[in-house]
Each structure stands twice: as structure tokens, then as C-alpha cells.
Amino acid sequence: MNKIIAYINLDKGEEDKSKVLDNVKTNVSFRGSNLWILACAIVVASVGLNVNSTAVIIGAMLISPLMGPIVGAGFGLGIYDFGLLKRSLKNLLIATIVSLLVSTVYFYISPFKEAQPELLSRTSPNIYDILIAFFGGLVGAIAITRVEKGNPIPGVAIATALMPPLCTAGYGLATANFKFFLGALYLYSINCIFICISTFFIVKFLNYPIKKQLDEKHQKRVKYYITFLLIIFIIPSIYFAYQLFEEKKYKQQITLFTEKEFTEKGITIVYQKTKFNKNPKTLELGFLSKRFTAQEIKELNNNLKNYELYNTKLIIKQDTTDLKNDILNEINSNKSALSQKDITILNLKKQIEANHFENKALLAEIKILFPAIENISISNHRFNENTDSLKVVPVLIYQSKKEIKTSDKIKLILWLQKRLSKKQFEIYRQDQ
Image (cartoon, rainbow, N blue to C red; front, side, top):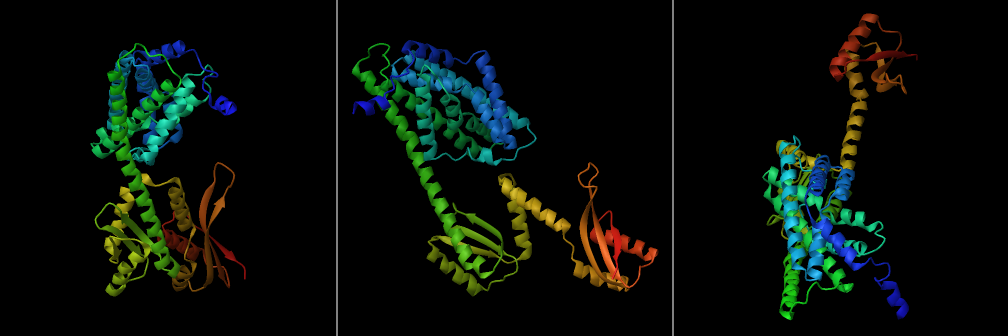
């Protein structure tokens, strides 16, 4: 038993308590250099969110001094030093306001207003954010009380992520998107509260001396405040976590439904949109060539229950004009949420289309204009490869009993340039 206690004992390697408190009190203040560092870190984080760069955001979190007053508040509660608590909360409020102002100004003057995935991920807090903030705060508080601080402090700054939610809140103000503002501010508040509470627990566990003896009534009041804050922040977060779980489960059933009812039957889906928060929920689908009768659509709607898709209406887009508009609108509204994988796929598709020529159809047209040509093959060829003057030129190789006239060759090149919208073409004859 003693060995187990020795393993979990935090007294070993602990810094002198008075030195730790002095260090905490020093880092609480937001004046001079601390305020400048905070403002610069906010700009860096805002740029990172703006360009969707995880590395830049991590860098901003590492240089941010925001943890100081939060940890100070935890120590103030733990040792019943209400002067320290008041000063910590005052400085945290100043830091929050400055951060919101700087990020709002940045996003207001920035020409890029699209919400990137890194930014969107900071608008919907859930129960997992509480766990990250609480246990990250525990690690941070333990590290602060050690003689050897080690690597945990930078890790805590990254894991608890105080900067990105503040910048996202600034984005919400700059774009008048108050849903983003409130969601991000709530996430920021969760992080602050639970880092503070976890620090409080470590301070009590390590038996830091109380500044002055208070009566039992005041001590109970502090406990009531902490319990009240826990309830306020945990209940909504549990609801968000439950909603997240239900939405993921619903989307899994949607995937199963579309695979069984369409994909496995060789029916290609070109458009899909799910509205989970609508009542009833809706699943909109568009298809490459398949057309459904009213009876088939009715049967598919009835089949939704077999996949546990209750309170859901299936809408099949069959009008090509409406479908095209829906696809374009979906692309425009979700452009910023495209992952790197989606972008790569789109680029590959463009490359395939650029390199693909309908040889059979073109041959039929060319034979009408140039009867001597019997067969053709068109493809893109790379010239001057591995040099700075690399160029890709479409080349036509044709088969005929004899070489076509120079005048016909010029006409064919001009026709191909116009027909295929290419600036350059080369033609060669293959001997039979």
C-alpha cells in the first residue's frame, strides 16, 4: 500500500509553496509586455484560423499568456485569497476584452470572410471540451507546482485552446454572426472555468496554506459557488454531447440506407444533403440518370423506418435545372468546409478531364471533313520534361494510306484548336 501511495504522491519534486505563489501572482497581471504579447498572439491565431493553418494556431497558443489569470483565480479560490481572486478575474476580463477587440478588428478588415474548418470547429462545444479543459488544467496546475516544470505547460496551452475560441468569437462579431460568437464564447468560458476548478483541486490536494482563517460560512459559500458553476456549464455541454452522438448515429444510418438502396444496386448518387435539425428531418438526393416514379419514392420513404431513420422525409430531386442549382448552392455554401482530401479529388478530376479526349466521336467528325484519315489517337504529351520550360501539348496521331496535304494539315489543326478549345496542337502520321 505504501508503494502505491509513493507512486501517486505529488510531494516529491514539489517547488516551495511560497515561490509557486509568487510566480502565480506575477503571471496574473496584464500590463505592458504581457498585453502586447497577448495582442500579437491574437493576431497570429486569427491569421491561422483565417487561412486554416493548424501550425500557426498552435504557435499562437504557445505564446499566449492567457493561462496566468485563470490559474491565479484557481489559486485564489484554493487558499481563500480573495484579493488574488479579484485581481485574477479583473485581469482575465481585461485580457478577454482586448482579445475580442483585436480579433474583431482583424476579421473586419480582412478581405477573407469565409469560415474555415478550423474556425467552425470552435463554435459547437460539448462534454468532451469540459474533459479536455479539466484534465488539461490538472496537468497545468501540477506542472506549475514542480521544481522541474518540464514539457507539460506547452502541451496544456495547446490542449485547452483558449486562443482559437476567442478569435472565433471576434469573427462572429466582425461578421455579425452571433451564433458563432455565442458558441465560441461559451467554449472559451468552459475552458476558463474548468481550468480554474482543476487548479483549485490541486491546490487543496497539496494543502497550500490558507491566507487567513475564514469562518465556516465563507468556506461553504466558496463550495456553493464552485458547485453552481459546475452545474451551469456541465448540463448544456451534456446536451451538446448527446446531440453530437445522435447526429453521428443518424448519419451512419443514412450512409447504410443509401448504400443498400442505391449504391449496391448500381444507382449513382450525384447530390446528397441531410437536414438533421429540421422537423421532420430531411434527406435530399439527386441521381445521375435514374428517374423514380411516385410509387417508388413512396416505398423508399416507407423503407426509412427499416434503417431506424424515424421522423425523416426523403426528397428526390429529379428536375435537372433544380438539381444543378442545388448542387451549385451546396458547393458555394460549404466551400470553406472542403477538406484537403476533397480538394485533391477535385484537382484529380480536373486533370483527368483535361487529359481525356473522345477519340471515337472526334474520328467520326474528322472523317467527314478529311475522308483520307482512317483512324486517330489524341492525347496530351509532355515536352521538355524535368526542365524549367516544361509544356504539355495535345498531339494527334492519324493513320492514312498516304500523308495528307500541308493545307489539309493546317485546316485540321485550326479545326482541332477551335473544336477542343486548345491554343496549340501537333499532328503526326503513323505508318501503316
